[in-house]
Image (cartoon, rainbow, N blue to C red):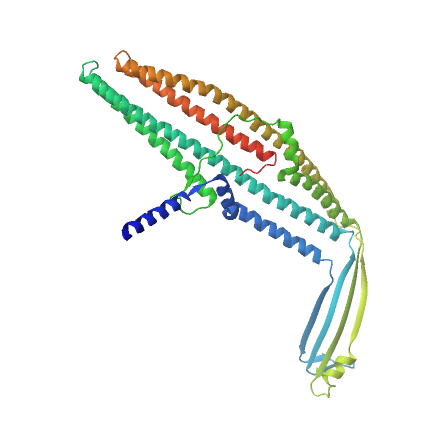
Length: 436
């Protein structure tokens, strides 16, 4: 009894673990956010922008350098009396210097502001990449659900062929149908099995696409859960209303807006080349001499006596740099004009995408309504055809024709349903709702 109980517990736990493999759409998206390589690469790019911003911020600080030189002279050397003699000497020099830019035409301040904008744009690109991955996951998710239904329909065709085979055997045995008709039935059953194989392959490939997008190494046991809501009785918002909401939440819109501001800052940075630069520097230095065949003062005494302290200002006025600054300004203005066009194009593209999703959803709902009627009519026709076939007054060709029409209409209805659900999900996403 203990062994039986242990086996039961193990089987229960295994079934529980298998059930955990039923991934929901939220599970897929959350997993991709942590593991997808595109998202990781984009994150690294954002970190690189943060480092650039920090570098530009720190450029406002003065630098500080310690310098040291050790020199050896052999032969004729310059003495302390400023004469040359055949004597060997050693010369040690030390200095501590610092320099800071006081004014550079506001280039540093504008560069920092530019880096901030570029960092914000890249952070928005992070969101854009995540959104794109989420949309691709949602598309694959609904594609897998559709392929599952198509597979079920194909498997039901095999069941109908099996039922037809039983009926045909009775008809042939009673002499109401020729024996050759059994071969036709078997050929149709084989064709149904081929359709199942094709449907299984399509389902397998769609699962492979999902697993690769999620960056899962082993797809064994991977499966998705069915959706809780599959009704198409859902009122769609007007595309204009969705677009107004999307402008405040879609990262590509905010990124395009910041791109214009970034371009304006770039123009200011390039114009700073017209302005003079004022720098401040300070330093302290000393040196030590040692001559052969001569009595030399101690290192400490020379170091203190030779101490020199310096402060100075530097003014640099640009007069002519072969039109480099002028061309830099012209290039920055062209880039700004391009950024404005990108902003306009991004807004238009978003509205077009919303419009397309809206009308695709409407079309899918209308198609679903028409195919639903077709499914009902073909199902009734198939039931009637089977009765007539049993009575021997309906040919196998006519029966198979109706059966294929039913399978086709059911497939089209499933496609319309999942197309509507997907487009509705996209519209919710554009309106700022969580795609999960």
